[in-house]
Image (cartoon, rainbow, N blue to C red; front, side, top):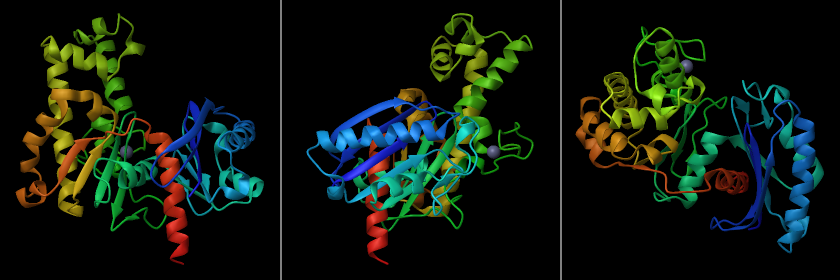
Length: 321
Ligand SMILES: [Zn+2]
């Protein structure tokens, strides 16, 4: 199969032509205009046409198109409903626009679901019942069971970042309190550190960020932990505990063969995975933990592969009628 992938992110849009083995033949990326969907989509169509020609193909030889985009979205109507960082994209019928132009079957899913499909088709736990966890600004999951994506009745199936772990916990961007993401989402975590520093808390995290609170991220927090900074260590302790709690719920609910994790797990090194694994037995049965591979994602271009995997899943699903 020849597949066109369109990965729309908050800052960049990446297009690629690939196949069902996860081989990317050609690709190109350009900045997303968060306020102007029409402009970005028009450019995407133009770049896609160039890539199709560069790959030595015609549009008719493209079997399907996959679109990965931020949620919340409606995958059936193929549009983003509302997303905080892309104001100009609300209710724009992205799938219709692309399909009307190319006249090829077009499928769309949110980025976490796409990444779950990419892990299922191309990742280190290929072919397994797995849960992929985005672990960056926010937390979301792509849940794959028997080769099928569990997106839920209105695309909220993988919104595990908003499972409530403690009602008295921090306020989350979604309006609830104590969501997993309110403790472990990169944005919430950094915001809390900044707020504590503004209140006068002393921590070397600020020094690691060159004295600029805006530059505080997980990298700076990890650097501070390695110097033994008491505040950073305490904050990280809560982070790891909540990670173990939430992953324990997933193990107990889905009994997956694998849980594959993104950014924070990839960069967390010895501070992340071993610490979290040590605490999981408090939250899940050993029998569920023992059969599950829990590891960081090994896919380096997961955005592009997500869009390609969405196209594959769309074709397979529609063939089953
Ligand atoms: Zn929430």
